[in-house]
Amino acid sequence: MPKTILEFSAEEQHELNIALNGWRYHSVIWEIQQYLRGEMKHGDLSDEQYQSYEKIRTKLFDLIDENKAHLE
Image (cartoon, rainbow, N blue to C red):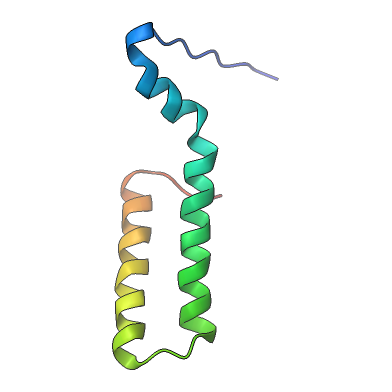
């Protein structure tokens, strides 16, 4: 199996933290997506609430696609 080695200088601590915590960001985005889906499918939402959730969910998917950050 191929290995990838990432190297960061001492000044790049923030970038290192982002790289190390990427799976956490992925998990948060996945949970938000699942929450929105569940509320839209099973929640007792008014039409206005449903439209707001739909707008947020669409924006989330647009951002995921634009950044090539697919949740696979």
